[in-house]
Image 1: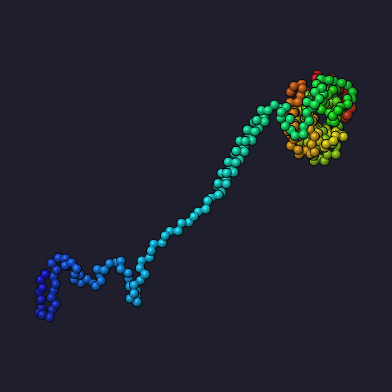
Image 2 (image 1 turned 90 degrees about the horizontal axis):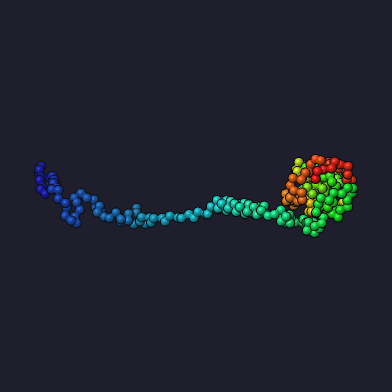
Length: 271
């Protein structure tokens, strides 16, 4: 480094740097005091004291999310429903594969006269005139040569037992009700019978239960038209209970007349 003092001794010498770094430990010319201090030093407060220093990092707060029970409940319900449907289908298939006699035996309250009185259900025993029956309404036994039409016929007055029993022999289900049964109950029974082949409905004086169902050799008595066993009885025994086969006639030349006296003068049917 060279120092020149042009202009006399009053002027300050001009410092010319030679590009060399200052000696270790010495601040460079013109550097501010304290410039070499670490940036990590705590800043001074306005009062001259030290501050609190840099803040510590805040740990993140974990938010616990509740379990979503809605989808779980939905999937559980669907699973239970699916299992129920499959189980019912298997049960229905099993029930449908059982012989109709076994299905009839499963109907609560049904009476099977085929077991208790085998002679009663032999069939093909045609007799003229009035016949006395042990059951009321009758379920089988001797009967008139002419059957009562049972093509979903609804009779508003009593019919002759002797013609009705012949219809049972052909596979009909005969539903009877006490004349004092409320009109809405009768209407429910009519809706089950009207237009259905091998079904018929009529009032019956003196029966001990409000509603009674008869098939050849079978009987079921119930208290009201909403009893689910009515449909079970019809489904199981209609046609099946016939002892003359499923093609036995239930229409013409049977009779549609009402009245409890048998009509021996009616045209002789072929069966």
